[in-house]
Image (cartoon, rainbow over all chains, first blue to last red; front, side, top):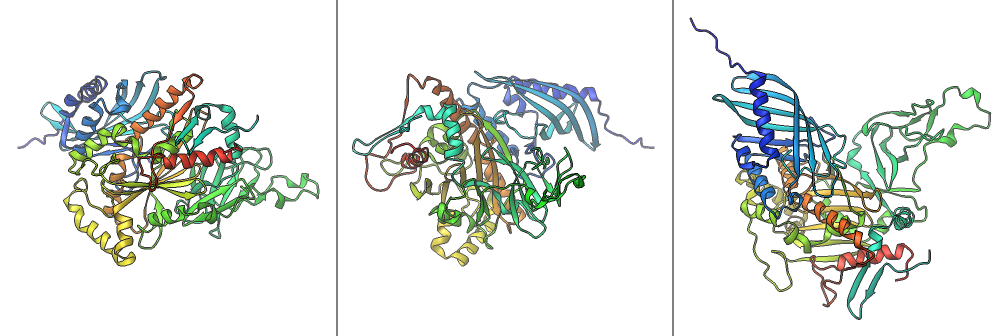
Length: 166
Length: 426
């Protein structure tokens, strides 16, 4: 007799992972952050007016494949990336973490976030929205297969740009 | 205020200076609202944004809330989004499809052609009250060229096609990407603020002098992606290929560059991937068949950043972006940017176009955020305008003949026209 196995994923595991990711991003440890990514990882920031759009037929703010993420990290780590030199200081708060789907090794997670961003001379900019991660089970941890960041603001407006990894 | 010139334009000494007060003064901004935005043709939207009868977009144009809408008969209108009764906004959605717009305050209701069709309890009005005189107001003029709709608050403005002058030739070059001559705005809008005077965006949109210093990380990215970034071959060039700055009349101007950065229509670069080659060859063949070899080369192998005075930019570069912006105070602007593509584009070509867009443009692109940074640093530096009054803009004046995209000829065209319209002596 075989006992049906199913991947058990707890919210605590997922939360630990998201908190770890947030800490790496806030500390600009972008090489370590990239180590969390699956080989085919993608990173999307849909436009404010089409949060459920498809990047193949809708103009996004960010629609990176794995190679573009690598290039993005090279760019924003360069002192000649003027928009991020000096770097933004960011501080992310993540809450309302929910596991919304488990399919084989893939775990779909939604979480609310607030990302406070500070730069020289400027008032704080508050990015508020939802993280949608598709995580790939990798032993006792995860790899990020897809990372989708939905911004609640009706337009980017005074948030200005998404020149750091949101 | 007595008229004075905001520029020093000395063609003998070959100097050109701009008074920095024009970038910081609220008084000057107020004058711009009547002398520039109240007098010129101002971009409203693209025909393709209103596909079906009843489709509408509400937006601000030159500071005015308007409804850009297609009526049941297919006619496109630009209506002031203000109830004739007591002034409330009547269309509160940013886009959608509607036969009528009802003011939520007292229920006055307008058709999508702007006519007033219902006034609740209208028996309380006198006989002399005539609904037909209370349609939504509209700008004095509203005309289009090849799908680009403009409004003017100036009843005496010349027809749009005259106003556009030779800028029409460059709009035609963009539209020639489409086999049927129909381009469309692609879903997804980028709207963001820049803490800088709006006129700095005009300068930045066509100023190729800044590319190597502001965008070195983008150039590195292109090189990392297999695009050959060669050092300039001729004296005076700062970019890998030659580009010109061209005056188009009425304050319009463009850059006209030999392309080195790839174009979704239809110049392949390794960034697009090997798999894209056959389709891009096919797009190219269609261009040659339809337009002939020479015109096809113009469309595919050159790129241009076009400014329609005062505040419409069409960047036909790594992709096509339609970008407009308006001031929200002397030191702040609001930017709206869309992607434009041929209506008949395949799914794969459309995806490639959008991906190419993001390699350079937009708030998450590999170049635009650094432009924004540069403009904001200018605005911050301008706090010293009393002590350091003049911006230097004479690059290229020292030579006869053609002016390069990295010279400042085209910036001077803008400022001369702006100065003239502001009523200043030349």
